[in-house]
Length: 142
Image 1 (tube, rainbow, N blue to C red):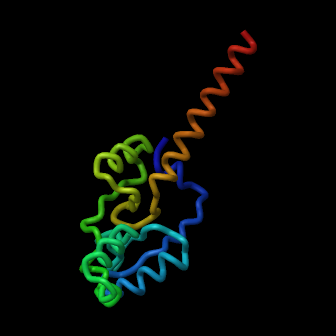
Image 2: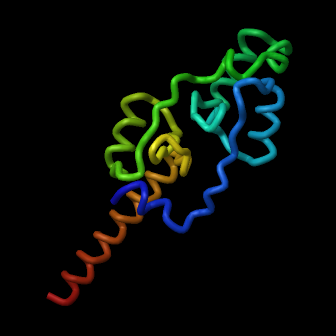
């Protein structure tokens, strides 16, 4: 299955920030939306990711002064992205190899979705459960 198919029908409101916001402002947005990461978008282009991990490392290094820094100083950049026609399996492989938990999905450079490893794993688990149920049904009727 492709990412495009996975995100079809999903609410595509993507919470994001800019590189010129403060870490404190971005952290507030993460908390308000109960999310772990968001793309950093400047002039319509995804230039990085700001995550809880970035926030943690920043606070560990700079203490309370971290909240006044700009997102551009602490974000993970460049962003590793996926295209809508990428398979869920391929996206999971990239995320595992690169040790990341979120992928901006870009269609001709435009941000169309932001998927987490949880979204992709949930899909894979549903697929495995569906296959297991089909196998049980087959055995039961054989």
